[in-house]
Length: 105
Image 1: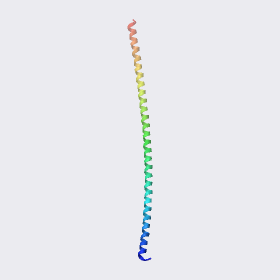
Image 2: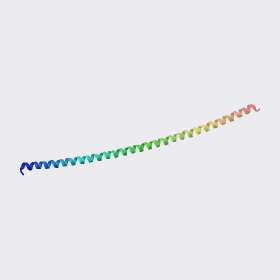
Image 3: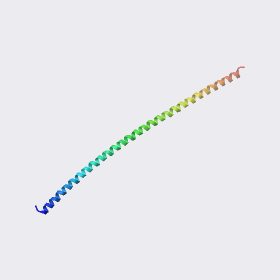
Image 4: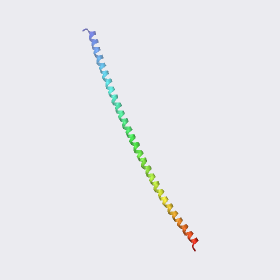
């Protein structure tokens, strides 16, 4: 084998080695990109789950607050209705007494 054949053979061998390294690097990069995409999808799923949990919690808190306000308003209305009934009863009694005094000597 002459020198130029050896040089060409060496160059071909180096080129093949470089091609193999490039292909290995491409495969490694592809695996890393896939792993990163999977991690991003996992993070997104977790974020969506947390957002849904927060939404549910907010809705529960809002429902509880609404029920509390409604119960408080109902209690106030019942108290006011009772007070109004007592006043009305007192006025009816006063009116009856006035009528009796006016009618009876």
